[in-house]
Length: 223
Length: 223
DNA sequence: ACCCTGATATCCGGCGTCAAGTAACCGCCT
DNA sequence: AGGCGGTTACTTGACGCCGGATATCAGGGT
Image (cartoon, rainbow over all chains, first blue to last red; front, side):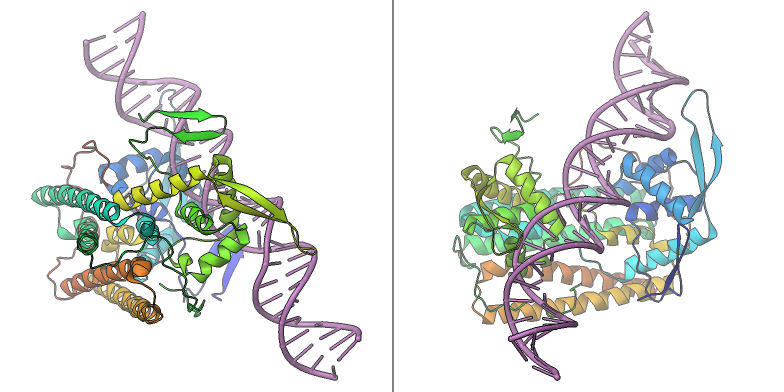
């Protein structure tokens, strides 16, 4: 639908009416860091860790180096320098290209603006919760609520600490978000646990599904 | 840490103090369906679609067949029958083994009880939001809130409809959950958008980060 | 002299995604 | 009745990404 041109390995987005982003968070982070200053991959990883970014972005060396490659192939970044220190492996320092910078901003906007379909494990778990008996289910939910609570507490502590260190709210917004979402889930879980315990949520192990009145595919891909 | 035994390709969990689940939602769903009755892979897929499970579980044929293979290798399921109809490809009907059933229940419990680390794209987006200017950011957030609202509306309609069809709450709990989470995010996004618009969330494009007072690795893997 | 940790990169196997490929079936048109 | 276009049944294969493990060297500590 969106017209785009392929020039060799380059894949230029042209007239991006639909940004059609398919840039992984990791890639985004790389772009972002290289926008600050040129670095070599290992340094990227180290920096991400220092800034706690790996709390929100899946990071490991395998995919890091791979992603860097891909970004280079796309022309978003280019090797600026290769240096060798002692007998260590030679390292390549990359820097952002102008195109890369555009992509960065575009992608950020897009990710923020449009929700994408995610598939959290918990949803799947819920879907099959009726395989447990009511008591167990309630207990498990309470366990979860506890874990959630612990994480919330911990992240809140970190948040305060960082604020005390002078970090601006804008720099910590993703932490705020995570805390809020975790807390929301916790509330919900707790509510359901209660409803199970006091019998308000009617339980029936086994086949609860199948009333064949569910037509399929009303067209649009939800969210 | 958890002692477990490997017998050939089998990997038995032994004294599962730490269930250490690594069963994908898709696998779970397969187990679940085969617990109802034996089926062949394509039928599994069809059933999942009929029940709207693919709204919560990533489903495509490639991984379906692969996952079935793996489950068979693990001994959770076994081929019960192979049949050929006309000139169609021969199909293999699988059924659940007793071990498989145990795994199913165990895994469900585990998934429900312990939160796992997820990496939603949006968090990453937020982390780099300062690359946008304030007005754009606010606008994008409002767009997102709109989309979220639409999805919530749509899912709510579906929920009511299914309830009207006589489905029990327990059978629809994952829908309830999704709606609640979406709504929570929507609220949060809206709040932040407002705070940006009225200047309450102080904006400063570019380097907001780096106060080198963030120590690394306090040990435990958060959530 | 030894060991542990950090720096730096690569490799390999598994899992997921996409899309192709073949057959049967259904309906309609003529 | 014949034929042909579309949808459904059913599986396989190629390929790319991801994550974990591993190799190598440097340097500091005991």
